[in-house]
Length: 114
Length: 111
Image (tube, each protein chain N blue to C red):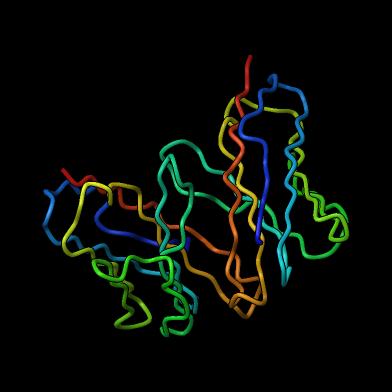
């Protein structure tokens, strides 16, 4: 049963600390997306990779957020320094452009910045 | 601009039928997705339409009219577990095939 996995599932940290979230896309998928979801904003695209190359990170605050894909099995999203307004659920999703490119979501990381 | 509209909230009765509408104004249309999201969980894929018409999948059906910029998700024989948010998303070929997401429709099922 192929699934997107994310770690950690929950993270509580203090303002100013570094936060790293990890995602393992479904094996064979070549697109990876990072989203942030809050009650007020809904789903916001932060970063998008295709074949490990970044295609769009215009939705990401550049001064504190960074996203990378060191290899095909790992995507990371880092926040440094974190702020209370970063509190949200962060989802990773993966897809396969050789088919419909349906995005399959991981369980998310619930981040709370105090 | 790019825009997707869905009702914010709908209420329906267990066993009944409900239709959730989605209208969109986007460039580069390349398909429309429906996702279900239970509270505290991740969105899960329900359906994909790229051609006009109705796609049926069990109790759920999805319809698309590209000329009208309109889609709906039809849920039959409603069950309590169908209480969730339903997200409409449009794929755009002119934006690296990214999805534009609607804000979602919260569906409340009453016994």
